[in-house]
Length: 406
Ligand SMILES: Cc1cc2nc3c(=O)[nH]c(=O)nc-3n(C[C@H](O)[C@H](O)[C@H](O)COP(=O)(O)OP(=O)(O)OC[C@H]3O[C@@H](n4cnc5c(N)ncnc54)[C@H](O)[C@@H]3O)c2cc1C
Image (cartoon, rainbow, N blue to C red):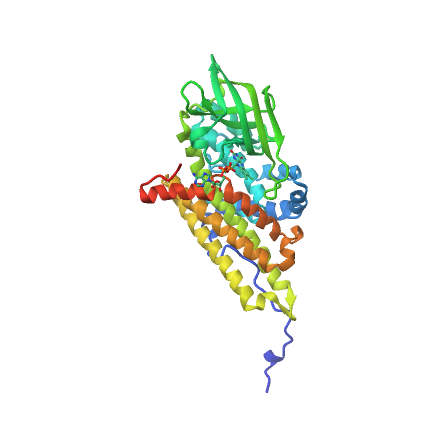
């Protein structure tokens, strides 16, 4: 005879909500830092997610979200003092990953401003420069960019920058071009890396680009990835910059530029991991809802195999970047470790987002279904902050003892 329990009408099956933090890394944060992460999540969920596809299609930056972004108080995250919020490397990483889970362009905009531009000043700026520039940048009243790459020099920036700096008394005169510079078409402060004609060494300069004669920016058009980030081609014709704006604490060679890149490269590892998470969560939700042959496609074995492989990639990448954050917090993260994580995580992301795209069938190439945006954006992260090949050459040199750079 059937029991009362067995006769109870069963409602629709309650399905597990998508969760790409399978090993619960966010929970390793202390209460205060977890609260920051949750604030960022709410901002991304409520302000960014509903509008981002429109901006992605239009190749435009959503200035409408900036007021709420400023209220997050995350400008200069990780930097101590100068009105910056401080915070652990793990928090910086988890915030970047959380942003990228919703949109990689927003994570990139923030990474360029807070990590590359503010990070350059914090790492190699003088005390006076930090006091002058970091507080308004922390409040995001002034937005920064980082100009290293040039039209003719990308991977080879370490050996061959063509932008020049010539000293005349207390003034430096900059000439040359920079390409691909994120935030450049509308930002206020450009960190420009140029070769000193006197000693042939690379030096960094803080340029107030809106008021410096000879400084112009052309927005780059026709991108198929990270379309929300506005990239620019900068041209400098006899731009005069005061000696007080030369990053002075130690910038005597490209080694100082590399110090900045060491931290921001592994930041790219967090961004790309978040990109995979976003693609996976959208794909999983789709698999739970999309019916074929009268059943949710998520109930098919081959679809579950795709999802398990995606989650495996994501979790492996999370383990890697979390360990890098621990090393960074201990002051031990090396350029080589950073390079390995950037190469591995970006390569795995390409695999994950293509599986997510595949899972959605035709809808995988429609922006409205979200996965297409992550699929395309993964390509840019694979190449910026040093390509896959350059990172592996750094690792290859470390493990073999032979440099294979040409
Ligand atoms: C969306 C986006 C945002 C960006 N934002 C910024 C920014 O804000 N600031 C900034 O300064 N730059 C920025 N960049 C530039 C980025 O860092 C460069 O694109 C990157 O360093 C590669 O340079 P490149 O594109 O000139 O490629 P190239 O250097 O021309 O490389 C082309 C190919 O050759 C390979 N290659 C080159 N040398 C070797 C070698 N020795 N051995 C083997 N293979 C090699 C590369 O791996 C690559 O596959 C951005 C780029 C993109 C796409």
